Image 1 (cartoon, one colour):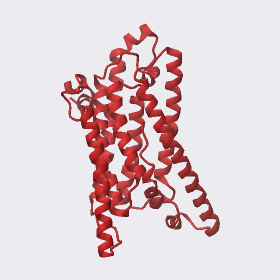
Image 2 (image 1 turned 90 degrees about the vertical axis):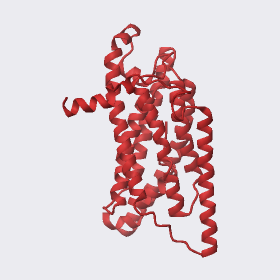
Image 3 (image 1 turned 120 degrees about the horizontal axis):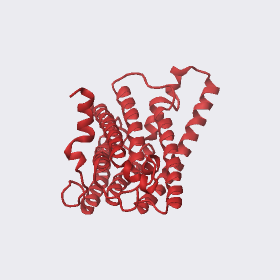
Image 4 (image 1 turned 60 degrees about the vertical axis):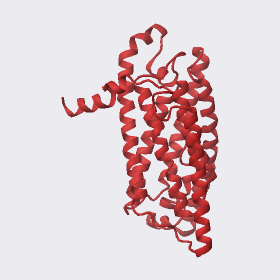
Length: 310
């Protein structure tokens, strides 16, 4: 087989992918008890780490961030590669599902775009796209390690970041448990943006120059804007077609995205106004803007709101 055929086989045609079935008894991390225990452990560990560091700082009067070496860069690289793999896998798997089930959709007059937004009632969490949804769910745990880096670097405990990462894990679990509509597009959008953002984080972590504008902020706004448009489409199809699968989970997801959108808009406006004011006051070029609210500083300050979801 050629390279392209090998990639297609291992990302969409492998028996473990085609025959995947979400099961609360056979898959790691698939039970409600594991979900709540893991989220609780994540919250407790984050608070414990923050308290320990504060005690050490108080005793030693040491305020400089702890040296993390290559760990942040390796984390960013791994997240970028994992996100790119999930994006490629679910894209190929979606194309394969469309190819195999298009004949059935003609009976119900369902188009490909409608299926991407609105799963038919009775859809079960099995097959190719749900395999990659499961991999995406597992990747949320690796993604949450970023909280530890934030605490170690800044000595700050972001309540919103902890809450947000916990919700991301919870929501991705609901996608599988209730076969939620819109998750295919949500994963495609999220992993594509994450691959770019974490690639950029790796780029800057190894000492290469950062963008002269708040790159991560802008990516976040693009993602949230696309999510908002898709959520409106899901609601319209749900009302027109007489129902989409997993709408209870979708409702919870919509509330979360609405809250994240408001927080992100507030941060984006403040960032834009501060950057614009700095440009007018100083009149410097792109390189000097790294000392204002752009580039790395803006990216770092977005940690509290950068991880939307779905």
